Length: 124
Image (cartoon, rainbow, N blue to C red; front, side):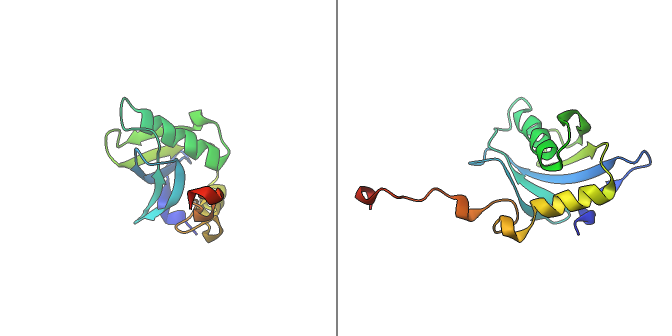
């Protein structure tokens, strides 16, 4: 269960805690950072690009529209709070759990086995 990563507000929206590592090699959910979902963003932390990328990634992971993910706080911080609307708590728990499954690689959704391998024998 990952229900410690979010809270449900009075309106039934989820407030999700996210720890962002901007400027990473690729964008992915990589695990947990305390009581926050840890994500790596390929986008740089300039002019809100990493924030937009976080919203896009979460919408994709949760199979919802990007408009349903709103940055509530942490615009210039690595620690962000995002409001997710239109998703039941049980569904959010299940979908975040899937994104963090060990089968997706160490730490969650970052499959280490998906790294490109050097299959060119001349480069050895």
